Image (cartoon, rainbow, N blue to C red; front, side, top):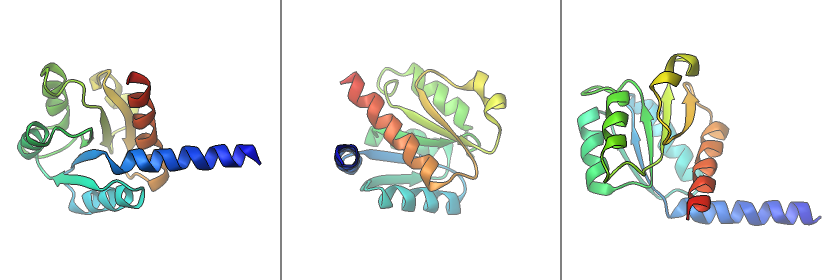
Length: 145
């Protein structure tokens, strides 16, 4: 009985933490952006901004200072790995965690990813995978605080 109660309390805490997140989705595919946004909203995330290109993503990151970035590797106007590298080297954005999504395999991507990439999600993604990644980001942030 207490295991169920603890699980429920943890789920409530995660849901409360999700509501306060500012999330930026950077993906060139509008259908994928809508699916990611819909999934995040169903998980309780309320503050979501979406963009389709690298230059727009860079502008949004600097303007909004999101708590989390969900980044597709192949975005027009500058690829996602370049954006990731730039954000990683800029003191103003270096601490923002990034979930990288790609149709490429993790083995192909691994040398390109940096320490602040907390999760890699292959495309096509599923809602459970996105939820696990989101909760992982919240757990890491809670430990850092």
